[in-house]
Image (cartoon, rainbow, N blue to C red):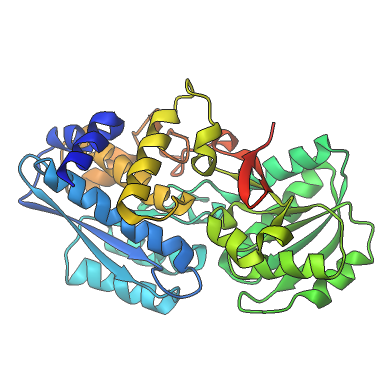
Length: 382
């Protein structure tokens, strides 16, 4: 294990070197709130795994100026109320300096007021633009936002001669935020939304909504949500004999989606995703290549499962926190917050981060590539 961690850092993460520049406490406590169980467990499990992997890596390499990292993790079970309870415990009982997570948009939005009130930097791993826009003093995030994801889909659709779209979105926080962006950007880009359907995140049959869409002039369908809903939409679309192209959001960018939908039903589904899931197709001279290949190799070696986009968000969060500590020279919450706003040109699994006072995400639409599911696997589109 120690040999692995040595490679991990030498290959470019350099977390130890970054932290070594800081004035560390005896133990640096980082809180983690992940949906390790419940409907979003396909997001939270790789996040939890990554947090422990990074913690062990730092400590195996000697810690931070001799201080160990202590990643204190709670499972919110994909429940917003439990996410709030976990946040309170991390701040009041565990006395953490910074918190990574929660995994989902809804749970993140539930704890945002808590972070602002407590004065604890929160680095969310969820995607909705509204988490960091408008900017909240103590809230950052590493997942690319829904706005550039929508633009990526619309640009691809327009390039394919598609101007009329149907949308079907989940009624949870991620789906509702995505729907807002889909409708707003459609007007801006001259795309006509000919159907606007919604499903509950726990619904098991979307044939009613898809039957309505089938009767419209939609040239393609955009589904916005996280598993299991989008997988149900994908299966129902095939069962109804709908041949209209189907776009998904980046909220399903893991092999779990293909598993739930079935490779045959998922064939041809397109979505914007980070380069991590198509690492083997990324050019060798791309500035993210080394980060992607190192994280993928080490995650899969340690956990005997395929890497997912979502675990990468935690890896990126720790990297940004480390850079913030380097910049500020302190592990105090306020110093970490101030340092995060000054992080520039740091490549993570999600892309190039350039954080600032008006931008607490720091990613652009360059974070995404369009991918297509082919033969049960991801294929990067040109």
